[in-house]
Length: 425
Image (tube, rainbow, N blue to C red; front, side):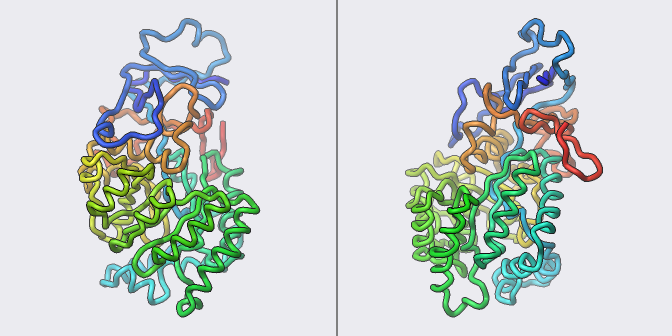
């Protein structure tokens, strides 16, 4: 049944001519329509406009579901382009170690961090992983996320990496949220390979990648290219192998140092390079000459107390910027994109318009989805949310401690939550 949302206080992120991304000064521009209406047919946005020009007859008859959004705003759903949402259990004990003064790298050397999550994932069944992940997906949908990238990387063996990716594939059939799978076998060097890391890189290249590709389990390939993890030479080999199997690159880069990860990502036409706490003039110049989306992960920098990525400098240089949650059990245990939106403004001094663009259209671009997601445009997938009554769209990043989402609509259907189960009306 078509859905008509009427009396919308403000329709946000409207595009008459859809763009794949926004960059530089354009990031401070946000098109809206006050006192608007929007019509959904099937899974698509059919039409929208000012309430004075609503076509006659739309509300007639019993074949249209009408939602009165008086005092409320409509936004495109958030597009979270970097998460590790499939994992087994939490890591709050490491959080206590962090409070006591241990660094991220020190915790990792003690068997914590990624290796801890790999151990827990090995012990968990696919059913357990699916149940945990569905709970997290429900939570982020309630907070306004409509599309999410989920990485593997807590397997670190052929069997467990494939298990993770099969879980992600199953989640795509169980949840209305749009899921993009990424293979991240090169997330860390397992303990047993510490003195023979070349063998592990070979296993990623010659065993994992071919099987991932043969089963069609991933759209992208990622590498943690940073100090203490994978070198640029190792990253180069892995991305080249992935490219041969049709897996486009995404990169964890420059979170801990000037690693060269940005440059190797751009070399392989990475769709995005993510983290970027250590980004200087040469990295910005490299990104300016590419189609790669710089993606900032404010939740991880906040939780780990890392330096702030130079977002203002990037935007002033003409770059686009996306913001993502990095939802994971160790360094960013939250998938709340409303909080990420707020951190963009609070910590990185982004204007509300810039931050909204970063969590919608630019996030969609960083997943290869911006043709159909990330803005309000005719013909795009109807992934949007209706806010609670709010005074302005600037209120979204301003009121960082509350959920401002009242109704989520994914794929043209109102999402309802009953007894902790995800259901579509």
